[in-house]
Structures are given as structure tokens and as C-alpha cells.
Image 1 (tube, rainbow, N blue to C red):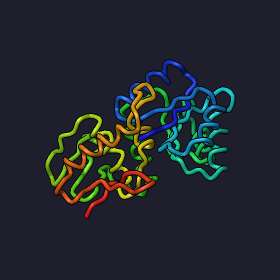
Image 2 (spheres, rainbow, N blue to C red):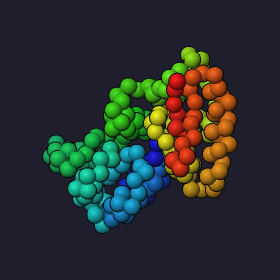
Image 3 (cartoon, rainbow, N blue to C red):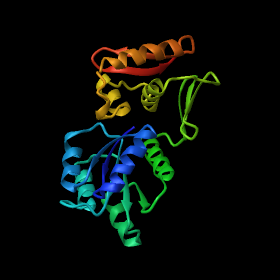
Image 4 (cartoon, rainbow, N blue to C red):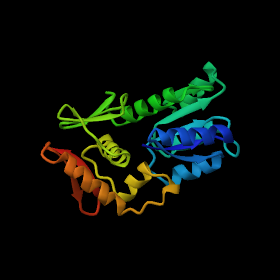
Length: 222
């Protein structure tokens, strides 16, 4: 999962970025509403938006309103210290999908993000599956044909990207954006190595990673 975090509190933004990335969620962090609006216009590879309402430059309500006016249907979770009914109603009317009042627990934010993305993709169930391959969000574990699937951390991260939208192709760059941080300095060709390893682990299970020429890789089941 890749999210845009719009939060002007430096300490909170730094902590959230590191903590979410440690949990396998790639974060692009901006601290100004104008920067958030620009990023949302220029990039369409986010899975969700985490938005503070009290942003400088352009407040969170305006960022959200502009997002919906462009008919961008990106799931948006509001972080706010102003947890009032009026604030919730205004944000819902502007197109918010969920709220989390400050202070909050990281585990709850992570769970809400996964729930938002599942709903956006039409899948309410906390497990994601492709044939005999199942990923349990709560346990952060893959099983294949009912048995635990042993994977390296990077293999796990790549397969998690693919199972989130099984049947849909991901380019090498899209996979990199969701698995690695900018500091990792990983070349797109490294994705081929992880896909090769995953194909070996999935061999004979009825689940396969298909190469779609010009589009990327897709997880499919027989």
C-alpha cells in the first residue's frame, strides 16, 4: 500500500512515516496543503490519503474538496484534533471516508487504512485471496493451500502488493513505489528477481504470476 500523508506537525509526520513504513505501508509525506493538492494532481498511484485538517497554505477541508471536485475517488482518512460533530459533518459532505481523532494508536490507523482500501476495491473481508493463496491482514501472514508460506521480507512485500489487486497488472515501478522507500535506491530490475523467487514458491499451487507485455505483473489463479 502507498499513501499520501498530509501533516504539518514535524514530530508526528516523522513518527508516522517511519512507523507505517515499518508496517509495510509506503508513505509520501507533505507538510503543506498546497503540496498535498499538487501531489494529488500529479500522481495517481496512491492507495489512500491521510489528511490533517489544520494544514498551512491550504487547509485540509479545501484539499479534500478539490480532490472530490476533480472526481478523484481516492479513499481519504481525516486526522483531526477537532473531533466535533460539526467538523465530521463538514468533512463527510466534502467527501471524507473516515476519521481518527488525535491522539490515536498506530494499530488503529493501520487497521482503518486497510479497511478503507478494501472497501474502495469492493472487498470488505479482512483476508485477501487468489485461488489457494490467502493473505490475512490481521496476522500479516500468507498461506498457500492451507500451509504457512515462508517468504523473505521483500518477497512478502511484493506478493502483498500483487494479492491486493489480483488479476490487475502492476509495473515494476509501481511495485517499487509500494515496497521500497526512496532511500533504498533499488533498481526496477530487482523486481524481476523477487518475482522469479515467488514463481518458484507458487509453482504447482494453481496460483501464478503472469507477465503482461507492456503492463507488468499480475497475480492469477487457474
